[in-house]
Length: 150
View 1 (cartoon, rainbow, N blue to C red):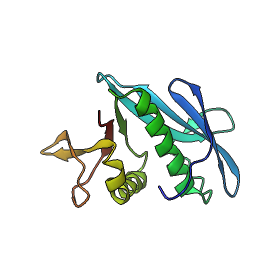
View 2: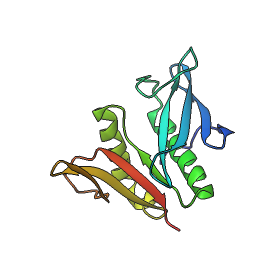
View 3: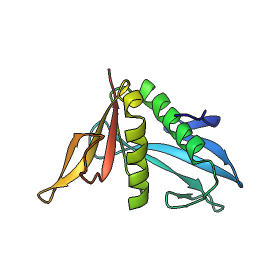
């Protein structure tokens, strides 16, 4: 990405935190958790709320989205570098966030595709299936998968 990432810390083997500094300071969390599917981990991302809970629906409008996303991508790269066999699943908590993630993947596809196989979840004939990410596709993507090229 075109912005350097924020400094971040790994709190546990699967949880990372950093501070978004814009209009205000907001603690962010990126967490990887196993799914029922072998070697597929969900990547969750959100704001730490005052009560300590994490919200993936918070819309902080902190003015630093590029730097925040650069940080999330750097964390994803670090995590997958030490867990090469794992496929990462992520989706947006709203349709707008799915569109944002698709736009980021499309914009940086040439860079990302050197390190990762990128695929997406689509619905065809009332069934979900995984397809390779296509920058030019008009098909609606519901989620994304990232797997480090070995």
